[in-house]
Image (cartoon, rainbow, N blue to C red):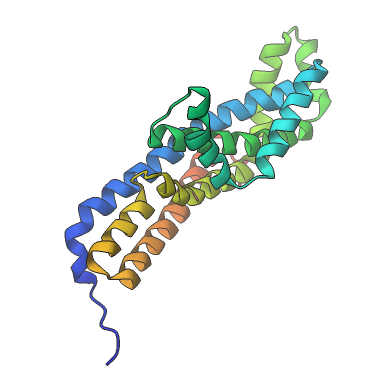
Amino acid sequence: MGYRFDFGALVQYLGLFLEGTAVTLGLTAVAALLGVVLGIAGAAACRGKHVWCRRAIAAYVELIRNTPFIVQMFFIFFALPSLGLRLTALQAAALAMTVNLTAYAIEIIRAGLESVPREQSEAGRSIGLRPLPIFGLIVLPQAIANVYPALVGQIVITMLESAVVSQIAVVDLTHVADFIQSRNFRSFETYLIVTVVYLVLAVLMRRLLTRAGRRLFAGRVR
């Protein structure tokens, strides 16, 4: 006798699916906001005169980009308490996602800054602008516009990678799916729905952020 699909058995868990989706989106929003802001600061510091600062940032980027995200999260949640820093599962997940995204954002934004011709800065100095306004008003907007698609892609990747935060008992979308299938044993239907939800979230997030970028950067973003 073949397998009988029963998606109706999952209707009663709709509220849980929505709660899990909200947690996933909330974590992604926090990581995206903080990660991009810190990425800008880190990329700007890489252009500074302090060698020790550039080396420290380079070491941080290499460390994060060459270690698994789940290991970074485990270190924050399980290892840091040994040093007296205790975080809730949700706080640890948000911190791990931010730390991870920041490293990639630094490299992406740094590439964007390098793509802006030096003549732009020289033009700003020629009209009497100081370094900070030149960076914030002239260089940075052009740099972000040049690498905006890459930033969007990294934010979407971070959202998808957040599925592993369920390993430290964060009640995200994947954790909800694990809980539901352990109760009704409808693994196929449960994980199919979760797969579709992640797909929809990724596609919508990419399209919404791209549309926002087109308006923000006045046609520079494709």
